Image (tube, rainbow, N blue to C red; front, top):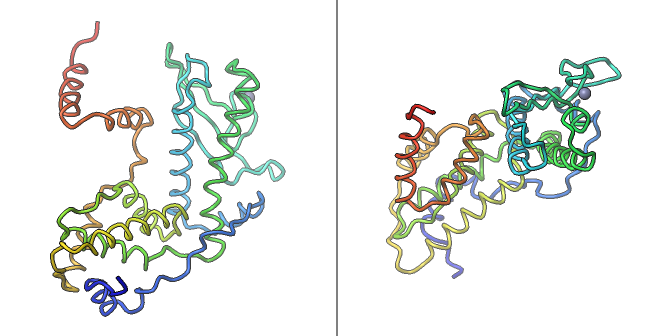
Length: 292
Ligand SMILES: [Zn+2]
């Protein structure tokens, strides 16, 4: 080993500034106070706020899908509305529970029987839905957890952390290299998709995503170091064209989808390719049938 691979030498020559990754705060995360959180949030641009909100909605949605047994079977989780500026003391709020109380998180559930919608604050789940206080407290914990997870982005933002453009460029280059390998490494498309949405609004990325990108780069390096690999052929211009093409071909955010579609999709992914084709075809037939 020891010898730097040829394609990396090229990269170093092309981009001497980004060859060495800048530091990214991988640890040392602090818990934010409500005041901190709101202050930092105020400083975000509109698209950045929208990004955080989408992620919260999505994560809370998947929390409810995973814990659907927590809620009365008659109700289905629809969406959650979030008021990040919620402040009771300053009388700053615009979302309400069924009972009229102002809330930060408004959970919208639909009755499976009557399609009636109900909007609830998290603390009133047991009052209005008749779930036990214990279950309501479990739901509350889960939601808090999502809240904390998203705090990481605010913390990074507060540390003046930027989108890690250097890492992203190395990642694109690794993908470029990957295309030439005899057996290209399988990469996580959803990860690339997510990171790209952060890049679009100039946000730092989750530490876990940073590490995941790094480990994909390493995997490709490892595969590329194997003896039998063909020689790397690459030009700076062709790489840059490839990178642009790659970014425009990554489909947009996954988070627009309805939680039920995502749940079905998770199930569908477990099938073999032949099964998937059949299921798609049959599903189309099934929904086109007049129901009786
Ligand atoms: Zn209420």
